[in-house]
Image (cartoon, rainbow, N blue to C red; front, side, top):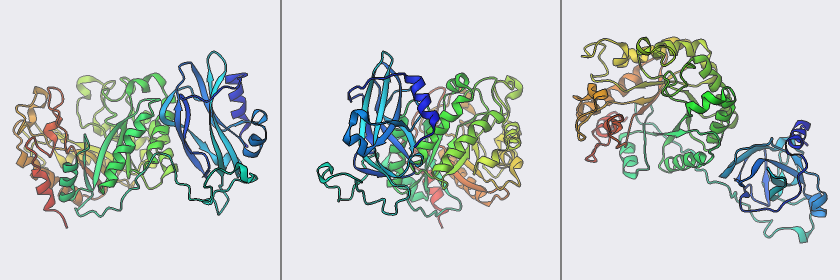
Length: 486
């Protein structure tokens, strides 16, 4: 039924465990009893007793359990896990590791002081090779053992997932915007402008499965309103530093669960060339590639249609001032990404541009100087040149213009944007879309405006100044972009 290693590992870890009772802190929420399953499924529930040592899932033959629950032989189908879960993902069960049949599924939580707590779900039919899998029947059960209404259609009782919508793009290239909060009016405004994507940034914290619910709610909300979704997933640099390579599989497992929510794209990390986002002294495209590859493979194994976008390096030339332990210039980092073979496990190369103070068509004339990241065309070149010939397009996961209009003076660190008006912000975003749409080798696949509806405007974080919905509720950028509709 299952590889011997799982059984041995579980026995070695847990030793002799006496039977225990099912309690409210050990629960299987999904799949429900009287259900059929195929392929790899996600088990949801709760396992958080205060003295948890580890938990795993196991199965036994349904008929054998019915005849003698105490004598049933339970076989582990997942490895032991030590992290408690509340109303989240317990584990994945690959049902191909057992033969088709009817089973009881059991969650076994081993306790540090001895004993165990259990949760049961069943009968559950594994039907990987049965063409009539949708018609649940309990093999070998008598009529007295049949649960009520087994002839009725059994609806899934797990988390509701709204499928991705069919979206028609009316602009020269697909355009979207990053949201901070659920906002009906903002969704209406950007839809009228022709935007077809919404980006949400989702944090990853090891063991915090509630974040999957956070992501699910955002994906569902966006799909219900007719938008494609980009989930940008940034982990914790301190967890990455402390766990090392073990972190990569944890991250991959998380984005794999996000893939089940049917977003149209997932971005792996954010500005990984800075020690603000990646551990100091470990900034290296090869390390990033080692995190990206398993994430890409997990996402594609679940939904090949999802576009995987690399994290976008921050546009910068600061490595000379701060050293390579703290920062890599974006052009150096992009070249390192290409050398590390990033194109083999990404569908699109992430790029940011958010420090412009002149029209995006210009290649000179910025009062700050001639550094290439100030200029929209040369910023695209820095990302594009290492990937020519790979057939990998560019995806702007952030493109924005900062204006203090309606807020007041910008903090000193952002004073470069003080003279940009909202009218300029609107016109420059319109022009940037046009320019990006004309680019070839590589082309631009997606452009996400940073941002739509942020309101935060404090000394170190004036993100409201980038928002296209201004403090008075107007959206001049929406009106400007709408003129590009075909």
